[in-house]
Length: 233
Image (tube, rainbow, N blue to C red; front, side, top):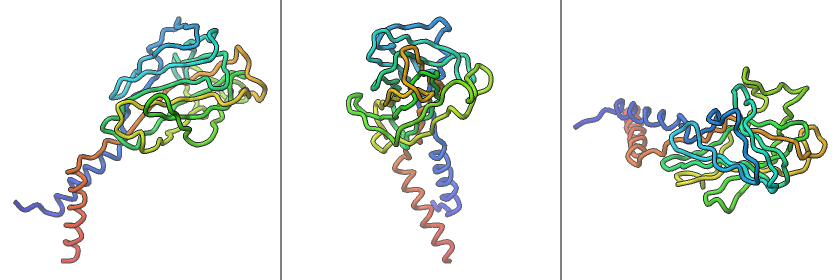
């Protein structure tokens, strides 16, 4: 059976187009938390994802057993995930599968109270034990004047981070881990982090591109070959 170069190019184009659109693998908008959500302890326990192709968990881990986890208003939504008593090394963690996907990215929105932590690092892992930082220190803005403030009404883009690309190590993994880790005792207003100072996150999204099947990759190359030969004729 003869296949025209045009047909091959059309199929190849469709294949490329499909892989170019990132899929949401796992996401959290924290709207599954009740307004009465409250956990006191070093660990928050797992919070189930609210969207995406794979189930994942969000959690918080602090040094202090007196940490209060709560669900205040989000960035343009009713809920977010918040905690206080921040020390250096305390973190939020988000997990997802990436099986069948590559070019993994993460995006989120984050703010602190005036006395909440300012300096965070984004870290990744494939085993939940060894973590590597992506990029440099992130500056979290205060949820206070002169900045806009979070409310259930309009989302404020100034608090958004990402999408931030992870390394190829995260491609096609049963489980990947992202952590937002507090790196200093400097507060969002430039002073010192206070015991009652809070930080909250919202709209966490882990995304990726579908890994093309080997046949699709070969088809793309074949289409290019046929198209080139057709132009020379």
